Image (cartoon, rainbow, N blue to C red; front, side, top):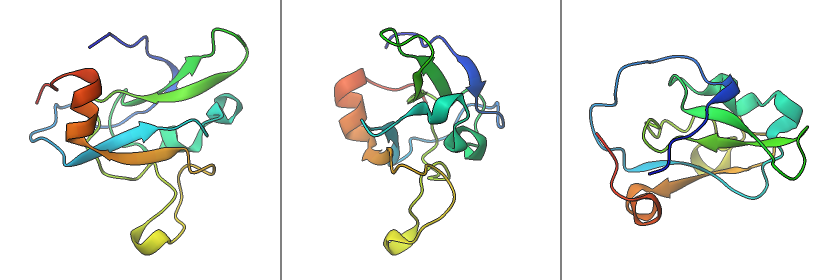
Length: 113
């Protein structure tokens, strides 16, 4: 798995390693705008350096959010949808999907737990 360059803004919170394999983790989809450098989802994340802003190489003043799959605990606090599609705080653009860990591992390789 490639190492992420973790730029600000990035999430703050728990620094201990996750204790078990989550069933699903957050994955950013193509709807992410990076909220012009002030993303709501990052503020809701409870894990240190899990969500971070990544600069767009083609447009240096713009960027998107990226989730570190090694640290995400699958809590869903960054998403904007709760049970049965109810709206909650989090991403205003529905740019975060919860993906089964098996799918993520198929793309990134095995995760550390």
